[in-house]
Length: 184
Image (cartoon, rainbow, N blue to C red; front, top):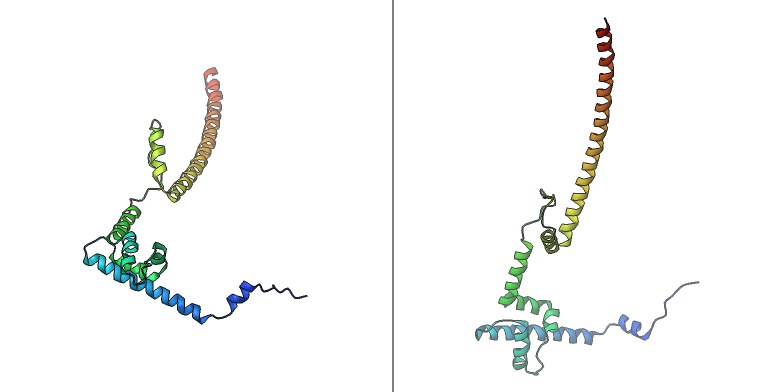
């Protein structure tokens, strides 16, 4: 028994080639590119700021059809969006802000010396400002350090028990000799 998926009318339409639709999409893409370039160039000539809003507003005047562009139209067309980004000062400033934001001094995952009497509220505020990934790295580091510290503590406790036992054995060994020497 073969399992075939029945073809719906919409699926059948997708499989057929529609060259007229491809031509329409290409013409629409080219219209968007031309309008964006014309509008951006005019904004620059007039000394105005190049923003998506300004492009959309002025494109209605520039467009022979009077329709203009939408923000989604500019953002959805790779070539038009690239031309906008290249000439937009506000876009470049935004990139600068993002670069500064990402260039922030990396937070050490190793816990620094922590004062027991520190202001916990202030520390909490500092942690809330850190990215989630940094906090996870720091938490893993602290957990690892805690595990190592617990192992060291257990080893020291066993050493201390051994030293106490040895001390008691030494006392017992020296005590009888002293008693024997005193009697003679």
